[in-house]
Amino acid sequence: MSSASAPGCGPDSGKTINPGVLTIATDTPAYAPWFVNNDPANGQGFEGAVAEAVWERLGYSKDRTTFVSVAFNDALTAGPKPFDFDINQFTILDSRRPNVDFSAPYYAVTQAVVAMAGNRAAHAQTLAELRGLRLGAMAGSSSLAAIESTLHPATPPAQFASNDDAKLALTEGRIDAMIVDYPTGVQISEKQIPDSVLVGQFPRLAGTDEAFGVLLPKNSPLTPCVSAAVEQLYSDGTLDRLAERWLCSAPGVRVLA
Image (cartoon, rainbow, N blue to C red; front, side, top):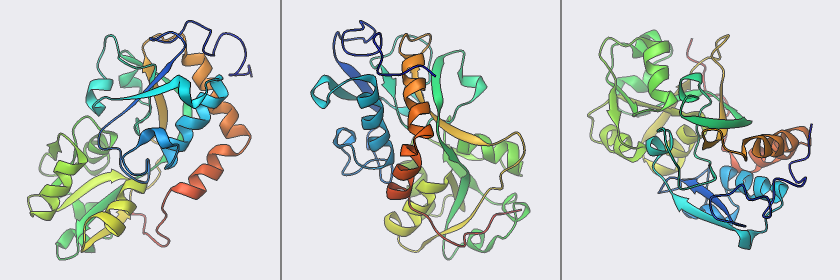
């Protein structure tokens, strides 16, 4: 594997949209456990720490990096981008590749179900028990795709512009449960919505494993550099250490068969 810090990847490479500066994007707000204090530049939270580790492997110092805000679905559209890479829980999907590039994966993830404690969804123990309920997820997300492909619900799932909108619908009783990635589900149930519960997580099915990747503009000259950096972080154990430090876990959460 080539070194991501080799000549041709750093500030003098001419591969960034702003010469000598690495422009990194994420959404606003930037929530825990992925970021801390809505400040993606502080190197805290799992994705904040991964972003910092990547820019260091590419040969950039902190004063040679800058962050911009780009909405999740806007980053996935075709065309020019205002960033060199975006880190925002983007699942690597073949359907997205015509518009954007992805790095090597940096985190494997499952989907989880969050419901209010008083809702019948809170007592579900199987996927079948969820199919007749009102479900929701962020539009364009792999969570929404998982509802449709794994649950095959009786009613089309509600789509929301953001997880904040989905959380509001959950608390107001407009949906019975929301589907999010597992670490976000833990954060919501433990710290964000009182009286909410993490009902369970989707099973890992053959051929459907999900993984997050760093997103780059289509055919970006930095794609091989960022992929090599992520691969180094995986092989030397950095990604595992960062996940252990920053990502919440909820022991004993059932897998919904």
